[in-house]
Structures are given as structure tokens and as C-alpha cells.
Image 1 (cartoon, one colour):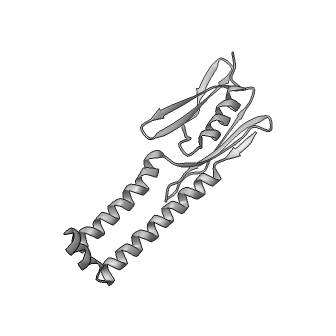
Image 2 (cartoon, one colour):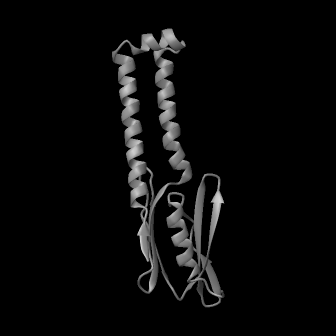
Image 3 (cartoon, rainbow, N blue to C red):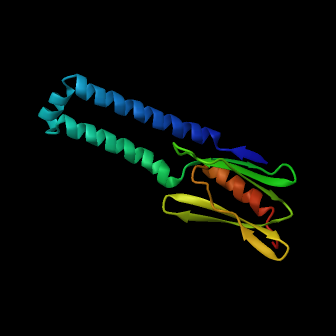
Length: 160
């Protein structure tokens, strides 16, 4: 089975772009038109505070995805290996990581929920030693994708 969350990633990028455009348009309207005078008369908020509020809302919106560790995630187990590729949706230098595990070495996995995110940890067995890969953010997976992932990985767990 193989799947990825490309649609979710596209949606996140689109939402961020739309929010940036809306913020820029609102700021330009506040500066270039009489909207700031209208806003001051009706709400008592002056132009500088309105711009600060718009920027703060945009930063909070983007920060939500940053704190969630939103990421692209691709899963493929159609060969002799389980292949997981992912990268965080960060604006600067997000490393693209690929994990390839022989199905015979796959031992177990855990999914932990931490604050706003879910993380997948994979354990492999090499002889008598069990090693753990660094945690992978799976916060951007849909419910159906998470179910598929759990079902697929459960089929490879040793000692069931």
C-alpha cells in the first residue's frame, strides 16, 4: 500500500498564501484609503493598532502549523522495505528525510500525542538490539490516512 498527504499539504500552503494576501490587502487598504478613519470612528482602533492586529493574527495562523509540525508524509510498503518520506512544512531549510526499513527488521511502532501534534516512532530489531528512529510528525494526516498507516504497520509488528 502507498499513500501520501499531498492534498493536505497543498491545502495548508494555499491557506497560508490566501491569508498572506488578505493581510497585505487589508494593510494596504488601511494605509492608502480612508478605512483607517472609519475604523477609528466605529471601533476606536487606530491604523497602527489595526495593522499590528492583522500581523499578529497572521503570525498566529502560521505559528499554529509550525507548532503542529505540519509535514508532508509519504508511505510505501509495496516492496521488500517500508519506505517513509517526509519533510516539515517550514519556510527555511526543512530537511527532506527518508526512512527505509526492511520488513524483516521492523519490530514495532508507537504513536504519541503531544500538545497539538501526533508523532510516529518506529522501532527496528538488529539481532538482539532494538533501535528507535527519531519521531516523525504525522499531524497532517487525515483520519483515514492515519487508520491506513496504523493498519499497515500493525501487519508488520513482530510477536503478535
